Amino acid sequence: MALPGLALHPRGDAGHHSSENQYVKDVASDYSDDRVLVAGLRRGDDAAFGWLLDRYGASLQRLARSYVATAAAAEEAVQETWIAVITGIDRFEQRASVKTWLYRILINVARSKGVREHRTVAFASVRDELDADEPAVDPNRFVRAGEARAGSWAAPPVPWDEEPEGRLLGTETLAVVEAAIAGLPPNQARVLRLRDLEGWASAEVCNALELSETNQRVLLHRARAKVRQALESHFEGSTP
Image (cartoon, rainbow, N blue to C red; front, side, top):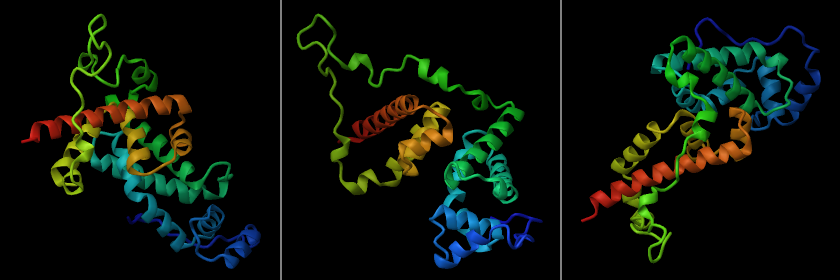
């Protein structure tokens, strides 16, 4: 991803980050270490920026798209995020990880764009989603109170997780998953994507999206339940 008109150059103040430079000299190019990555970005190291872009660029694009109306607007949000990283790295105090800082910048940029576009999703409230009465499983699938076996399954789930791996990973199945995620409320979709598709830890998601652990867990549980339901319906409908 090119950033037109913006080049990385070594900083003029050679002594300002001398201790960081020495550290980098000892552990060259290990950009998975935040200290090395920050030092490289502050020196204007193209390799450090390239590593950051390769690692997070696609993920940032996907997350930005959940806040704005078009792919072009999401691309603009990501470009603005990279520029903010380059121009703001000297002010980064490293109280959070580089990844958390990066995603917070993206979220603020994309959310502002969404508001300017008058896009409904930009105003989506976590509280609204948490307050919504959303049982994880349709109550009609359980035997009603007062009847024999009350509370047990009236319509047991289809055991789709026992399907052959090839079918689970097939194009049609993956399309069902993607469509189910696209239909989720915005905050549920963001939490699910970061946790289950990007592989983030719970604490990382909470920090980036500024959620409490409890709220993150509720949003994830509801999102997973809806995706499981979509998969169950898909396999139930395609069972011979």
